[in-house]
Amino acid sequence: MSSQIGSAAIVGWVARGIDALQSRRDEINSLNVFPVPDSDTGSNMLATLSSAYEEAQKADASDVRAVTAALAAGAVRGARGNSGTVLSQVFRAVAEAASGSGIGVESVQHSLKLAVQHVSQAIANPVEGTILTVLRHAAIVAEEFEGDSIEELADTIADAARDALAKTPSQLPALQQAGVVDAGGVGLVILLDALADEVSGRAAAPVDLHVDAPHVATVEMEVMYLISLADTQAVETLRERLNPLGNSLIIAGDAGNAETAQYMVHIHTVEPGAVIEAALDFGRPEGIRIEVLDEPETTPESTRILIAVVPDGPLKDLITSSGAIAISPTPAPTPTSTPTDRAAIADQEFAENVVTKALTAMRGADEVILLPNGLVSDQELADIEFAAAAANPTLAVVSTDSIPAGLAALAVHSAELPLEVAAYAMGEAANGTRTAVIAADVDKPLTDALTEIVSDLLAGGGELVTLLLGRGAEDVDIEQVRARLDKPVEVVAYDATGIDEPVQIGIE
Image (cartoon, rainbow, N blue to C red; front, top):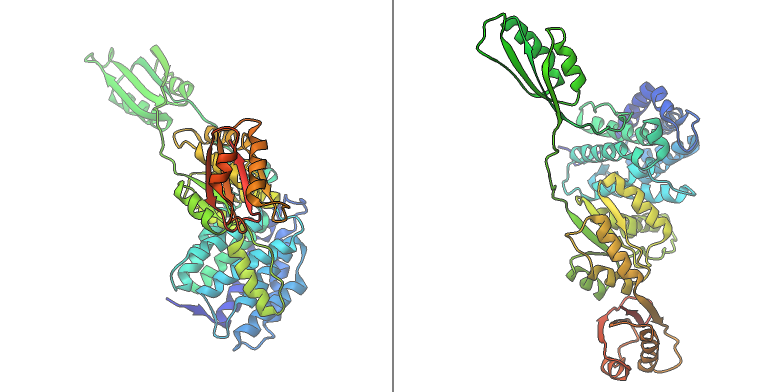
C-alpha cells in the first residue's frame, strides 16, 4: 500500500472526478432544492472542476506543489455558484497542505481541516445539512485515522462522507420534503469516491441520491381460520400464496379424507385482508380470528455521555471526576502574518474549535447531553446541534449560562431517567442556581466583597454555596467567609484557574 501519491495521481483523481460528475450532472442538478432550487449544482461543480483540471495541465508535472497550486488557482478562477466556490476552497486547502514529495496521510488530514476552516469563513451564514456537514464529518473521521496507507484513508473518508450525506435530509427540512440528499454533498462524495478510486484502482460504489420515504409503523396481527382444501396440491399452492404475506405460517390438516379435510391456517402478518383474500380462491374460510400481537418489550441499551464546556485548567479535572467529558471553548482568533502561519493556525483552529471537539467527543454515543456553560456562541450551538445528526446521537442541550449552573446540573443527572427527562431535571437545577461574579477591579478586599455578595444572594434562600476561584483569588479566606455568613450553609470552593474572573459564585 502506498504512503503518498504524486502529481500524476492527483491529476488523475481530478480527471476521474470530472468523468463522474459529467455522467451524473443532470441527476445532481435535479437534487438542487437548497438554498435555491435552480437546478445547477452539478453543472457548477463540473465547471469548477474542469477549470481546475485545465490549469493543472499547464503546471510542471514533476512538482506536486505547482500542480496543486494550479488546481487551486483554476478552481478559484473558474468557481461557479455556491457549490463551486466551496469546491475551490477544498482545492485551496489541498494546495496549502501538499508537500514537495507528494500527498500523504498527514497532508490529506491537514487539507480537510483547512478546507472546513476556509469554507466556514467563505460562507456568510453556514448551514448544516449541506456540503459543509459532509466535509466536516470527513475531516473529523480523517483526523482519527492512525494508519499510514493513503488507500485506506481514502476509503475511510469516502465512507464517512457517504454516512454524513445520507443524514443531510434530517438536518434540512427542504431536503426531507423533496426526498433527496444535499446536491453539493453528493458532488463532494463523488470527488472523494474518485480519490479512493484513483489511489486503490477500485471503482467506487454509486452514490445514493434519494431518500426513502419515512417508514410508517405497522401493527403485526395473528390471523387464524379453517378452510377445506381438496388435496395436498391445494395446500402447497395456498402455502406459496401466503408465504410472502407474513411469518410463522402453519397450515395443519385433520385426519379426514380428501373431500372433507379441513386445515387450520395460522400466520403473523401486517396484511390480514390479503391473507383472507388469498383463501377465497380455495373455498370459504371459517372461524376467522384476528388478534393484534403484543409488541415484545425491549429495553435497548444506550450509551449516554455528558459534555461540559469549561476553560483549560483544574476545572477539567473536576468535570471528569463527575463522569462527564470536559472540552474547552473556542479560543480567540490569532492574528496571522505569512501564508505559512495562516495554514498552521487554520489547522490549529480546526482542532481547537468547540464544534470539532464536541462532535469528536460524541462519536459512538447514542445520547449526548451538552452543557455549554455560557462559553459557546449561539452559532456554535446551532452548528453542533445540526452536525450531530451526521454523527447519529440524540443531542440534548441544557441551558447552562455559567459554570456554577453547569455544576448544579451535573449534580442532579440520573442515568436511569430517559434523556429528555434527565435533561429537563438538569435544566431545572441550572435555572434554580443564582450566580454572580467578582471582577478583578473590585474596590475592596476580595474576602470582604465575596462575603457581601454571598450574603445578599443567600437572602433569597439557598443551602449550598459554590465558589470557583480563579487567578487573583489566592488570598481569599474561605473559612472567614463561612464564619461571617448569617446562617449555616455548606460552602465549597474549587480551584478554577482559567476562568476570566477572580471568583464565580453559585447559590443552590
